[in-house]
Length: 117
Image (cartoon, rainbow, N blue to C red; front, side, top):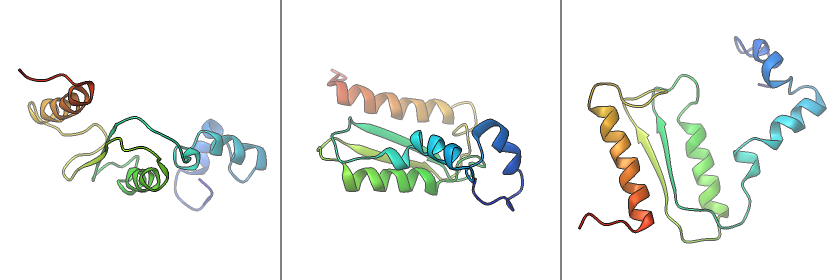
């Protein structure tokens, strides 16, 4: 957002603010997930990303998860699942999306202590 030479960047300034303006910059930073990580306990997390996502590059969630792992003070599980063939909305196809949802639900149920028995 700071590099005005990147195509379409300045068009988003009307919606998000211009980070070259001091007030806009600090407002944007106040809701930035990466910049708001701090040393504290976090819940169990299952973070997903897609290699081919044109909106949020896969390295952004990877950096956020690495930052969380460095600072978090608990022993809760923090999973980063990168789908190597998916984009913004996850896997395509009739059953692949259901498999992704099932994996997420399985993680949640496990952390809630729900067993398959």
